[in-house]
Image 1 (cartoon, rainbow, N blue to C red):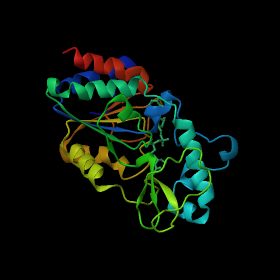
Image 2 (image 1 turned 60 degrees about the horizontal axis):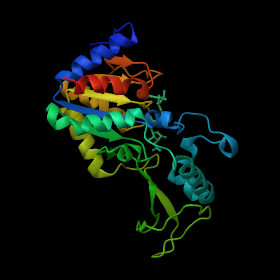
Image 3 (image 1 turned 90 degrees about the horizontal axis):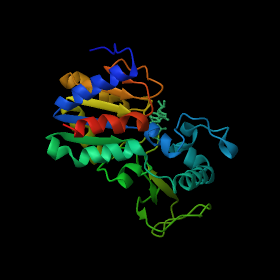
Image 4 (image 1 turned 90 degrees about the vertical axis):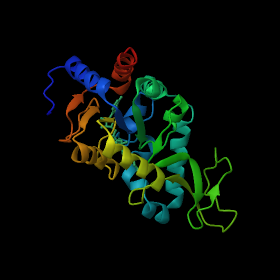
Length: 256
Ligand code: OAD
């Protein structure tokens, strides 16, 4: 079913139709779902002190080993930026849908690449593929570091082995945590509908989940993104901001 819908309302109606009859839905979200909460995405150009760096240059272990101060300060800046942000209507709509899943006789697995915790704040259960920006651990012995790091712009050392403390996010080139990845893989293989929301679909393995869903069970793939990706897996493309369309789509599903 190639995307042949001519208007936004046609695409939205097509999505509602397939979602109404779906028994199992796998949803993958990315930074775009938090954009309307005021958090810049990874592909947005950085500003101020950070304008000469891309996220890829900073979010990797080689960068941390080369210049741990720089990477730590970038994460402290990102934490300061995210701290007071709140879930937006897209996060709330997904949480409401998950809450009603049993009544709708649907299984809904929410998988996210986001480290900001806004899905959880909205009340969702979420498989977090890239960790949480609010946690830290030792780079050497991996012991979690539980002290509050607010305002700590200097590097911190592990009380157990004196190793450097790093944010507990998955960096480029690192493996994803097993439990959420296995849940995401299972949900993608067994869903009738796969929704890709607010992600550029460039970073693997998360970006491969839609292909996995399609190839395993011929799943219908819906994408919500104001700047459509070039993925040829997408059947229904909804070119709009998530917070603008998800609440009405989910209201329709709940109205059954
Ligand atoms: P990106 O920054 O790559 O992509 C964000 C996507 O969201 C873009 O395609 C935007 O067009 C879209 N977008 C922007 N505003 C939106 C809105 N209001 N509603 C819906 N979509 C919107 O973010 P991710 O795909 O999440 O990984 O990036 C994947 C991973 O790469 C991240 O988890 C991070 C990153 O670098 C690591 O740090 C390992």
